[in-house]
Length: 116
Length: 112
Image (cartoon, rainbow over all chains, first blue to last red; front, side, top):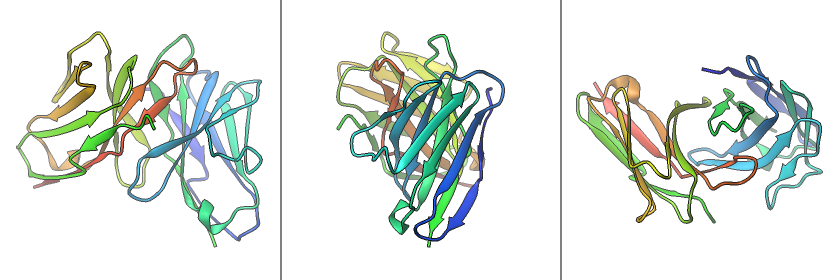
């Protein structure tokens, strides 16, 4: 199966700082990547769809100025949580979709963000 | 909300027993996928069933899809302690990007 990595796996930061999370597709070029967040004991909620070379598409209720997404290459998408607050503490998971119309998404291991 | 519902929310069984998890969704789908998540980890894709399929097998997994009832089930046969995880269904509703809408998940606990 495909491998998607995320870095860092865990981050603790102070309120007001910005945190960047990287999502890498290691063995295929992903024109489309997705960012999800997951609160404890809850399901995944799609935040945004990231397309290589273009602006991300954000889901309703997700602030694009707070969650900056950059998909600068076919193997890397980044999510930056700007001016993080304790309510942004969550588990952030990315996924990558193979090009060519495949419906299967390959998920990264997730990043646990704790904002103090 | 298109988000699906899963039941039960939690399921506890003994090793060797079968585990059945159900998923219902609200609008028409292109396909439905099942994923597994170990605590604090990412998701692992288990199986995809298309809207024109009714049943699919993969090893000890059996998935059914009833589009008339907008429901799907995941059966794990001869469960093992290592099957302990949360299981999510996710619907592909045909968006151009192929994004998924996840159900709330079933937390399965298999006791040795």
